[in-house]
Length: 531
Image (cartoon, rainbow, N blue to C red; front, side, top):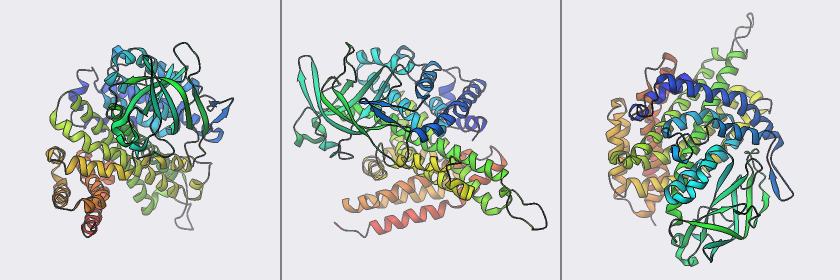
């Protein structure tokens, strides 16, 4: 992936031209922005990520110490306007389209996924505050955008991971404010030494346990009070993990910490979805970034490494071998398709925000695909890159094994693959026809995808008559069928950029029918399952 290729993919995204023009973003401006972000990723973030993986994070005196260079890099992102360029100008951003933010973030996510988790949660928190708490947003958003303050998302607890309704952290009214007590886990950058203040957007129970999610409210809980005093938040530990060594995953204990309610009592989860939506798109962008970075690494190595050929002649480059070419083309196809997917999702989200009804129906169809297959194909790309590099890829001399370790989490956090599948099937495709209709209408612009989109639509029709239990068994297969159909639409749209990219896309399309058949067989099996 190059800045030029990414710019061409963005230019082919439906709706982008209509968003770029009012923002004054012509091709030259986009090229300059992407050129700068690729440079920042390569020269600053990639070296930082390598040393951070080795050094890791640690707890000293009850506070988390991040790897050397993190603070300076975070401040640089803030000063350069990279943290929240799509935030409204009156809240400290630049008011740029979401798709441009995603395009700019993609190479940075690929270069330093663990580090970029803090910019992601902070930016998402800013949008959540802007949507739910204007007064808090006026105070917090400019600080989040400039990088002097940061924010986290605090949902999970030891006995309440994906099962959010079992959250037990309590919020008790205390005069005009609230006091928060309980334990939260899996909190990325739950503590750090990079910013002056940390705000935790936290779900806590204000209702009875039997109220489930309806008893949860959302709070902003800063690590220090407005008076500058510690706010009763303690770091119990940071997790030892397969990857993300440069991202401190904290267990936090809240002992009567002061908090401010965001939104209405008992409406915490709906309010927090403004943040969750942005973070799920970030996960897709993480996978897209890793896929793009891996495709470049694998091709560069294969062009340089000499192996094989006639014994009487010098060894040939790995790229001379058809099997290596196949893997490189697959890597290129994944990188292009994931970039196209997250850019389209971002564009559609902005269109929906402006009142486009078709986009509002399409956005919740695309978001689970971006989150899930950004993660899965990022993982597959990291694995294939190790394969291209051979034994060298399995060593720490090359970053492929680090990409593999870091990206593995992406199909787990911010909603597992199973949760994404159930959301897509039960809430989007089977609840009414809006999402499927919006997808099929847009797919008409890619007539070469008609067979696959038609088979996907037929699958959804079959499932409408299925028993509830069978629908749950089928959800994963339907999710995969949706991606097969959507990726075919994307591949058709991207054809014609170059001869080499067309080879990669042709390979992807050639395998589409087989992928759809696998999904169809999964539904066939699911429909045989009874309660």
